[in-house]
Length: 133
Image (cartoon, rainbow, N blue to C red):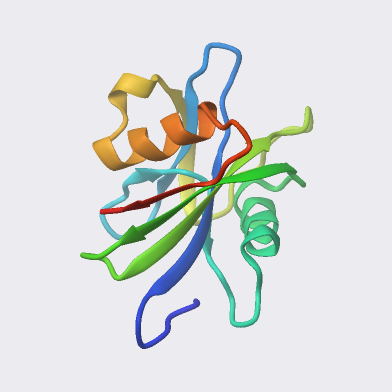
């Protein structure tokens, strides 16, 4: 994992279906929370490469990477998160052992932080959004 003396770097995917619901994965570890696909950058890895690797590990497919839509600094978690718009291929998804299930969720069911990230992504106009929590 990419931990530094200052903060953790991670990259995550916003993937929506035709109903504008957001794909989330349920972890098999820790508090077994739902979250966007993606994860930590390895040392020397760029956010786009990390996201492609993480999605292949978690979903078993090669994603179609879209634009970087937002960069978010989370002071309480000492982390910086890169959000990308992503499309899944038609191939079947095969979850990694790190995740027990996937589901699509309506926007209004997301946490406030996730909602900001997803709203920024879905309203992407060519400008990367920056936010601090």
